[in-house]
Image 1 (cartoon, rainbow, N blue to C red):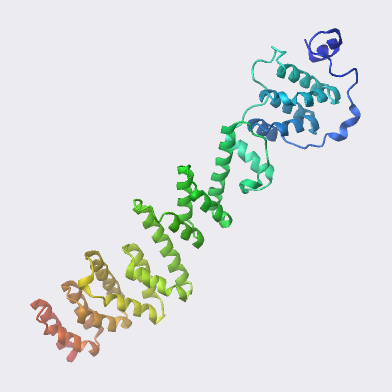
Image 2: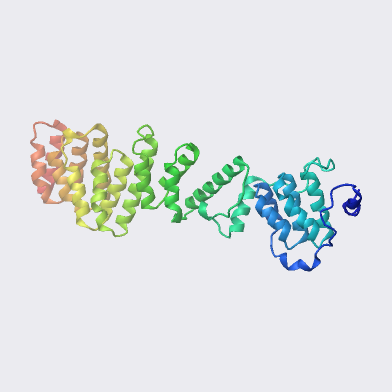
Length: 385
């Protein structure tokens, strides 16, 4: 039996009760149909359980197809509280198709119909599409959680997934260079109970070029002593940023770069600091390196001695006259055979008589190997010619 037949027979006790009160549809109320909405948005509202929005579309949607789909959505959501709205739509909507659908919906929601047992009508959307739809409706690419449209979402799981997706979108935007949400990402990194989100937020902060983000990450993970790789990655990131700012002309970063050279246990961080200091024209950079190389070797660890050899080797390969005084100081103080051999050869290559005293001293040292004393004497003899 068609809905028009049901409507016509209502007064004879056939089908559903008569809710029109004998009145004809009010076709002169077209001005109320002002809700402009797309089919995708209607699917969105149904997918997240936005009953209030669906009622509004069913009652005031501009297109009759949209009003029909919204009514179907209310049935799928089993929204019995919408029955009064549907009764008004059945009585007043100017379109017969909409009135018929409202009649079907009323019967279904009252449990008086067996005709619509199977769920049909509005197709479902993936939650990703649903949230993208919300963002699209909100008119922004990524907005804070408080700025999302307010929906009535009865399904706790759907609501939770919606919130999680919104947070992940914020992280994605931050990773892609949108630093405007740095404090929101910091908040995610501090959240308890959501380990996945927290981990992703911390990683996003560490991978950032934003100083506030990096400092926040340092505070957040300071008590996580077990995650050494995370600490190492963060230290290198902060070091790289400081070196970059220093090389771009921020002289205030000199002390910070110097601390990296003297105190970091990470050889990669020390290399960054050394390369920055050795490459600048500022004499303070070279003086910092000289002071570092003058440290008492007895206090250095095996790794620190290895790095000292690396620094001297790099400077030796550059072969710049500005390193002459540093090499002289180091040769006078060192007891490392490898360093002594390298510096004796290097000072000879410089050809400067400034190296004569230190070569003479080395050739007479009783605490070094005979071969080293002979090399120093040989270089000394050539420089005196």
